[in-house]
Image (cartoon, rainbow, N blue to C red; front, top):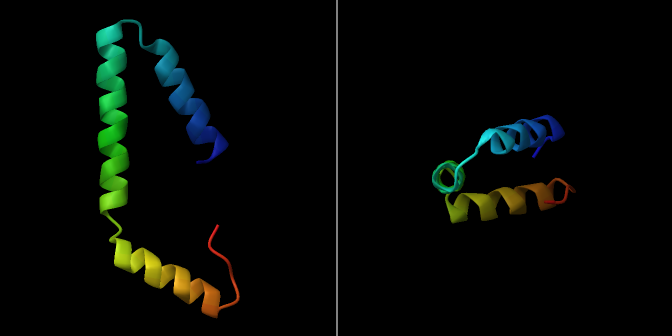
Length: 60
């Protein structure tokens, strides 16, 4: 994550005041994260890692 993105998320979290809104916020983050990971299939990620190795690059 970029520093700017992290700072933005921290500011958003600081603005959340009630326990219910905290849990709702965390649930929203989890859904966003799942959407991101679902956009990559495991197989395509493995192929991408192999491609990077072949190019002499490393998957960090």
